[in-house]
Length: 405
Image 1 (spheres, rainbow, N blue to C red):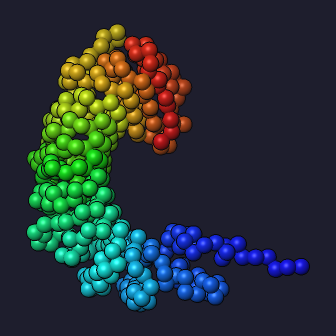
Image 2 (cartoon, one colour; image 1 turned 45 degrees about the vertical axis):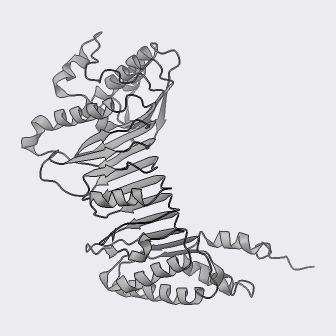
Image 3 (cartoon, rainbow, N blue to C red; image 1 turned 135 degrees about the vertical axis):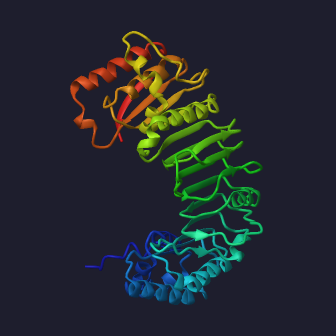
């Protein structure tokens, strides 16, 4: 009886490299023990994932040493890197090591460079100047890094840039856009320091701002202006305590407003929600041409200015003055995330009004907040369904769907 063949080892090397690209590099090295064919296969990898979670200093130091030795062995056989990914608890004492790793990636014409350098001490890694002029880089994700004395950048092939936990000024944004002619996606995750996202002159079609990390003394005492003439998809998420102003977003076709603010202090409560509502109404006025809108629960409730809330509970009377003139005329699809049913009642009535003034609406998708769907009573279900169904009659094409988040 013949011995069963090793079907995995019989695959072409290109397929094996693709399989290995999904593994942390220490697991890739362990495959050298499988058989003679696999003994040197790891040293030709073009996708490198170095991941370490433990924050113990001696464990981290051992990880850094492992990366150093691995790159020495890889240098001989590796010509071009498709991806170089490093994720570990960074300490300032490892700055020179990380710089060597980045220079290794640059030397091997890396296409995707991810530096996820988490830390609890506020230590940030200064990106080397050689990285700022790279014609091969296509994707990048940098967390807890820092732009230091940047005269200009030149990323001719860069298409996606994600930056997290990084402070920088308005000039950095302008330099990134000016030096990245192919940049399509810009995502900022809990960054701070900037007051204006000026994307004029670039080709960024998707902008994501997920939180603004910097603390401010009072709500709305700082303003974030977004100038995005080419952006088609705009997402604002997370905790953003600043006043947001949209300027020149004429090409935007899809927006997601799922941001929120922390609870205001007692002395700020009187004007806080009214100011937030006015801000959101001004944002909607800049986006009356948008056809696809996703609203988070906090934004929906903030739109309902306290001065007119009572009118919403008057049976048979419609109060639409809270919505900007022309709002909803172009809307075709509305997605509501984090829906909380009738806990406040205001969300349902706001959605009702959107249906009433949106003659071209084709679909409204309401996603229940996780864990709440099964807690809503039958009476609440009936109220939500009846209220929206009656409004839906104004638009024969409208379909209202309820889903779990």
